[in-house]
Image: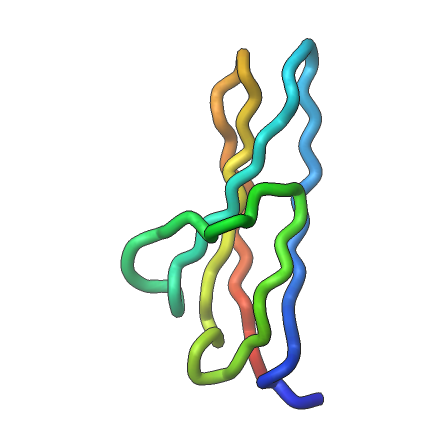
Length: 84
């Protein structure tokens, strides 16, 4: 397929005991280097990237921070995007 129109979807599964809704914030590190940054608007249990290209997105790394009111935040394992 044409890599300039492909997207990728990442998902996490989390549960909390007790009351309080979970909140989600996906973060991205471009090409596995540099600072991590919140992905704007990526605040649900799954995140679908915009259209990807090899030059712009191959090697980008993502993870999700899951929080609940009465609990510490937890970070998911990271996932590296490979665009072929």
